[in-house]
Length: 297
Image (tube, rainbow, N blue to C red; front, side, top):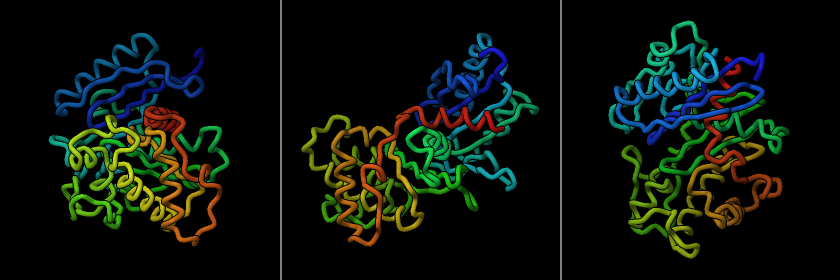
């Protein structure tokens, strides 16, 4: 660590904030988890966590923030760093940039990005993915979100992608026509296939399901449809799945097989075990990406 700049990283999620400290060379050296409450309760706990970390490692020289969205991610557009139309109570309109500036000072270089964009950046720099000029990261957990790296840079247009809100055709296996856990859309991927949707539809969390639970076939239908849409829309060289739902071992092989059926032979894809893969960083991708953003700030 000697001579290395100390960097701060935050992955802000709906249930917890992970506050990390490290360097570009050493990566994350220590992290402290803070439960997500209302902003006025969460921010003081985050400040205390960093005071603790900086007491052992020194003052941070830059900060990367990877947050749940939607959030303004373009510094050249009004609303940068501000949480937008989130269903999370108390967080709509929360100004990350101002809050972090109040905590760390106006002179500290800082980047605010979505958690999935940061995760996509981190995955793109893993040894197995470094040859990919384009990579999509899709996380399937409590919600669903996705980010894309193109030519080694995070892709964004007017804002950031909202891959969890891609519309998907309703599966013939659906229990109740029109079911959705999303308060905004009846037929989006998140409303049909997130961990929340799985629990609300079946009355139990996917973590408790045996391999032969009928819910897996329904989940495969929706995730394979998403892979078709991502392939058609962006033509990435690799799609990386993260999140707790895809930790189920049989799931991705089933998604690959169903993707082939839905694709109808239209695309010449690489071998599917190289095209649709599981995250190598697992639940650390967002935090690792936040540290990379701090290094570039």
